[in-house]
Image 1 (tube, rainbow, N blue to C red):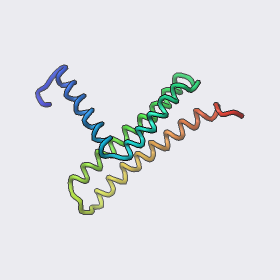
Image 2 (image 1 turned 60 degrees about the vertical axis):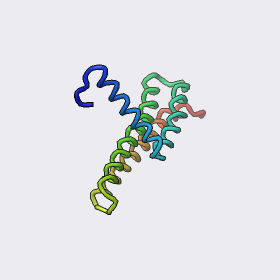
Image 3 (image 1 turned 90 degrees about the vertical axis):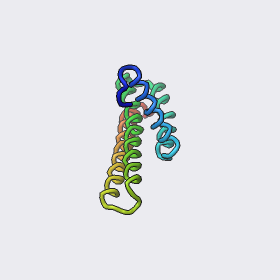
Length: 122
């Protein structure tokens, strides 16, 4: 992509992004699960009678989970590329990425819970 400018650079970058999404779908079971959950939750967020700001939060936290999962998968791929032998720092990097996904999932549950709680019948 070096040397490309303007529209060609943007098109190349978009192609690499799509390639990354395909790789995540193909090789990462957690990404597939989270994407399927997003395909349920995002339309649901659009159907709920909530304010536009609440709708944005509902959708935003779901997308955040996907973003964090992609970053975690990238970390894991690089660590695995470096070597299969155990190294404390490699394990720590993978654990930290996993912790980031867990926090994103907990944030999603919290936001959805806080917004949906008042909508539940009394």
